[in-house]
Length: 225
Image (cartoon, rainbow, N blue to C red; front, side, top):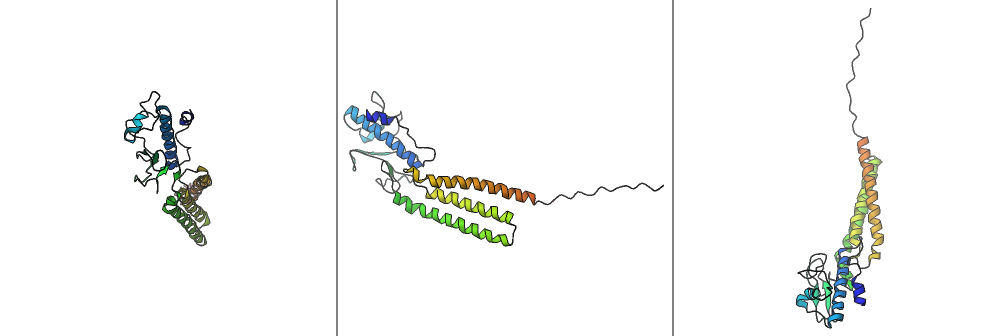
């Protein structure tokens, strides 16, 4: 009964979640379907065509499909029975499509390998944030030779772009979504500020455009009487 209730939970995470988070929720849905099948039938489905076994019961535990369930990158989920870590193993091979037996970028109910993502993406995110700050400060130095109304928006836009890209790379894979909320707020704020600065720069350029000089209309003097 408990597996049937859990099976009704949403199959995908919220709008802010990553592909890894959504894949984990999909895995959880299939996991509950397998457990419910075991409760009703008495044994786990065989790996060869397990998704069909979940559909051929009087009450299908999985939506109709002719192929095994896939993750958010289009790779079939790995289902292994008997399992190496429990009664059965169920996980995604991750974005690279290579089966690392649950390691590297593979996604399972336990989550994502944080160490892999730390080495793969987070140093790049920190580097981009630093480059954004350095380039913005460098542009500010041009304020001594260029009008500040151009320098400030350009420097701000560079800083916002570095913040958006850097924070995106620093985001957690998604299984612990509250870690991403401060970064999501930073990205949202940077996008809004970037838009405002862009409008400021466009207005400043438009205001500095050369005025069109129209030829003066000659006046015709009437002959003196």
